[in-house]
Image 1 (spheres, rainbow, N blue to C red):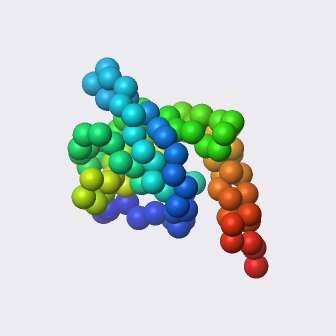
Image 2 (tube, one colour):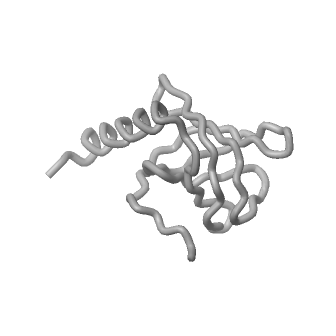
Length: 107
């Protein structure tokens, strides 16, 4: 069964680094949610592949996690965050909540 995201992704672009085959590859994060990202790496990835990944959230925090490639859309890849520290997950959740409140308001 294909992975289905639980939350809408927010269009928040930032830089990230993908660790693959002992190499560090700069990557663009195109959007994010609490448990997933849309990324544009310099080389193709494979669905099901799990890789260490880190990305900048705001100006003050670098999130470290493990991602799993869930889908491919042209040169972009939807990835699920499969491992993340509780502290990084909390920071990411709070950052996305603040982003939503500041840009869309709450009803």
